[in-house]
Length: 131
Image 1 (tube, rainbow, N blue to C red):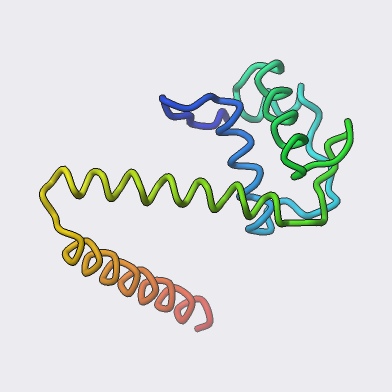
Image 2 (cartoon, rainbow, N blue to C red):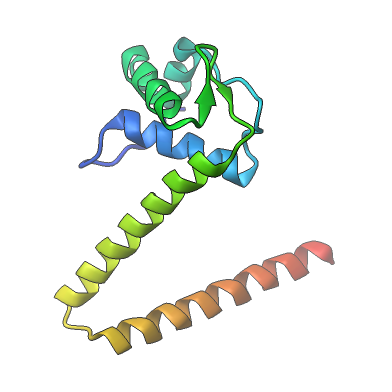
């Protein structure tokens, strides 16, 4: 099944983003080898060329090592990429909320409420899984 890509950002960067986040979530383990570009092309639905671009991006950032694309055991570069993604997401959301006329205090109140609601939801799911 192909991945869903969004407009406005290169597909290779979106693949690299997803891999970095998967490393941090534990879905891909450090020292694990990424699939060959041909295999990842089938997984993502992107061309082999685009997958190679994504792998080169990860190599330049130190998220993977060597031509075999072995994931680095140092998670610092993956965290840095995730933090840039998060910053961009929050900045975009703040811009959208500002366009709606919300003031900073209103945004902070909304963010706080959303975080509390999300954590309660996660606790509820965790509690029901333990039953």
